[in-house]
Image (cartoon, rainbow, N blue to C red):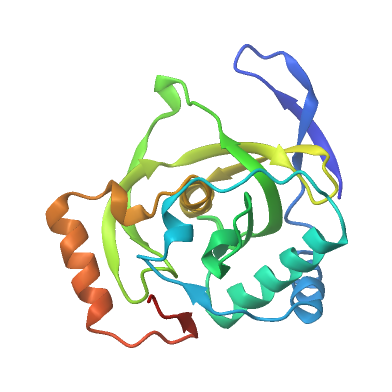
Length: 214
């Protein structure tokens, strides 16, 4: 994919990472991944794999490629906009996304070993919007997050990359990165709101296959 330079907060060009173009040919790329992949059931809150930091990706091989394909297939089945590997039971730091931003532009991609940039105070404009999660099916709650995010990591070949997002897409990047460090969005809620989200989940049947917790 085409790439463009990345600049740090001082305006100096970074040479180690580049923002990926995750917009061009978004539909074709998502379709190719999904059609190669096999949909897997979604793990839900309470499954141990969701509540611990995942292992770093160290092997950028065909097996990783197959996992990413399966994640795109699983994401489509569940009608999600982002999916972390531990949400299909795999203990690795990788997530995929097929997510629009607030301008309706579709972003499609995958990133391994993601780390969110710390934002300077002037960029930390909070957006207090509803958030949901495939691993907490049927539940939604208001959660304030910055409306801008940059996540840095590696692509499926191990090359350093960075992704920039605004609005809803920024929320997605933060949400999926959280997953890989053992946090669900409900972990960032007050006790009362977390209890309400779990109650919502208990009252509804998931619309996609899930892994029952023992």
